[in-house]
Image (cartoon, rainbow, N blue to C red; front, side, top):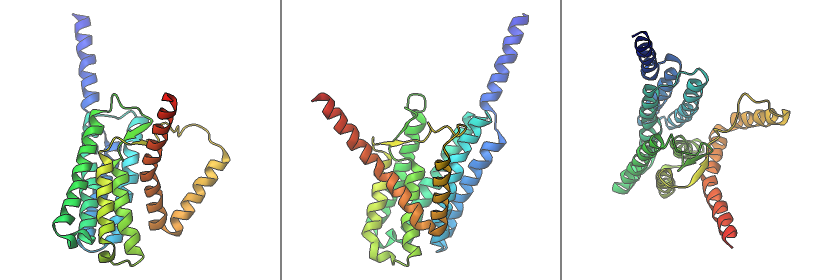
Length: 253
């Protein structure tokens, strides 16, 4: 009887931990959701630079909530579901609406179809990611991560608007970037996940110097540097795909 009571108490405690709602990681998730909603409001109001910058802020906040949850051991199913719903707003709906209001609405049906492909790609990408958590290789993302895809679209709007490029002059380029981001999210192309980087491990002095240089470059021209970084990452998957294909072909030969 005593052992049964003890087991029941342990089981109730475990259930409580799994189903609990923890404040700190969900605070970052809520802040990311707010940034996504703020982007939608600013985009519809015509403040495209603010809207694009808000998506980058959401991306930073989204990268923190999971790390905070793991470091403080406050992971929960509620947090995972909340994070996915927040990502759908910030990295699915917000960037699609931003580029649609800025440019794609001028293309009629082709414009809103491209925006829908992006939204659907983000939803499918998030659903696939959630179902593959237990079996996925932690070193890689399969398909372009939705925050990076959102940053690619938002960065394109930001750099164009910042350089006073008229939307109608780059309509088809905007359409192509939107479709590329949406389709690449649901592709099988591998992208480096950065999850294997140990933040608690000591690093060489040169690493800190490079980090300082990166921050200085971002401060110098945020739209150009951020869009360039995201574009390089988006193309890196195709470089990795080509390298893996070449290595496999060479191994067979």
